[in-house]
Length: 380
Image (cartoon, rainbow, N blue to C red):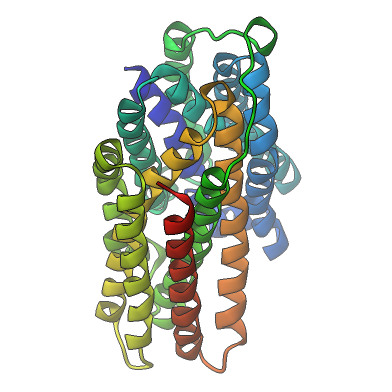
């Protein structure tokens, strides 16, 4: 039950990365804002999340991860209410910023509690697999749930839907999340940063650079190149997101039995193949041309995510779980945001959208291959 609660935390954090996107046109009309206002609704959340992950991870090591998780749920719930009742774009952006603060408390906090809860590395790897699968499930849920809520109840429901979930999760967390000794009450293990920790986080960053960048250009391909509606485009991305959610627990079990290198290798090889399939997309291609790209990316990241997260947190002592989680999540979020910018710039400045995809096929495949080399050099 505690693991399910921690999965709810990662699900909410990841859900609010994507669920708001389909509500932006309605927000623009209702709050009479501009394109810049729409962008800040998304950016405020992401900036706070990426910028505070490491700080709050270390804070959890100092004051206890239970306090950080409870604070994260409280802040996230309060900010969701503020978003749902915001009368203008300025207050909505401010509330989204605070919501990002709550998310930055929850993301490393939930992973660190898993590390505290499962001292056995094999059991911990399986738990991390379930946790990462819950986070992956939120990605396709965002556009689909957001589209349904906006169509049926309006854009405010996209934020208010968090409140009943928080109302249940907060008292359960208060009861179930175990107390942890503060930094002053326990003997600290000497911190040593080795190549295994550095390598795992480099691979995590490269994974999200290519992964999130590819998600962006595939979404643009479906909505702008093929002129699909947002809800249909969300459905057509299921071949990418479904393997991510399904393979998380499987990857965790493989990691528990054989270590992280095997699933990381499988995932990176599949990622190279998925990026290469972008070369098969042409001006006259339809949706079927990008299905192999989605499957390669989804299967690759499905095998990779849980393994690379476990490799990172296992590389540091257990009493530094907050730091390990903070570094890993910061690497994934920050480098992933950079990947979105780079991939968007490539297709935006290419002679044609399709030629940009071909350039990204070589870039993505090359970065996956570099990550494979780092894996074999640093991860056992």
